[in-house]
Amino acid sequence: MMFFEFLTIATLVVASDEVAVVTAPSEGELRLREAAPELSALPDVVLVAYPVSGRTSRAVRTAMNAARPAESDGGERFDGVTRWRYSSRWQRRGGQQCLPETTVTSVAITVILPDLTEPEKLGRRDREAWGRYFKALATHEMNHARIALHGRQEMEKAMRAAANCEDMQAAADRVSNDVAAASREYDRLTEHGKREGAVFP
Image 1 (cartoon, rainbow, N blue to C red):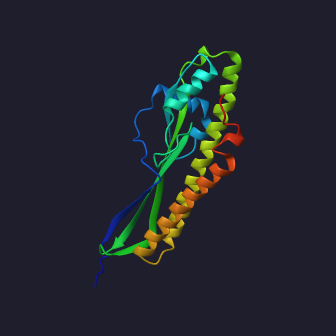
Image 2: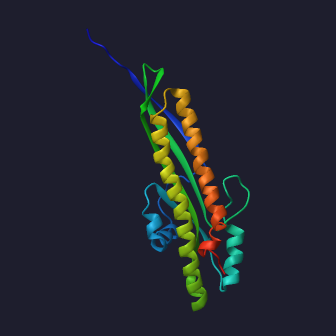
């Protein structure tokens, strides 16, 4: 007697906010990759640039204030923002029963940063100040990305340990909430990067 087990795949998506669609990198994104190589090298991270320019540090700050992105809830705006989306897939037996141990979780992370398009317009001191600021900002956002990457591992582990479909959903929600809370706490402790030097001018 032969026994066939029919497996189907189900998918769950948990997002911190909308993540940018991946396209060919713009000139600004290529500059960001060059300016923030450690961040760019992280897995599952896409850098998105918003252009800023000016002849003085004050003018650059004014341009950033006008263009910088909002947090995921559409509220307060910041110089840099990191967003992520988790996706989990698993198999079902006979199209009904979840198989938690088959869960595979992935994450897509988008980091939005300012791109100083014409640094040569700034004086030497302002350029140096921008360099220090941008390095601190990129490091701050990289730490947010690392929190999200760690969350991917935790979500997969928690979902695989679940007993059924309902427990899998609860595990995904719990980890997603924990990641969001850890990210908020990091911002609280660092004052959104200000204590790490992400201040310009």
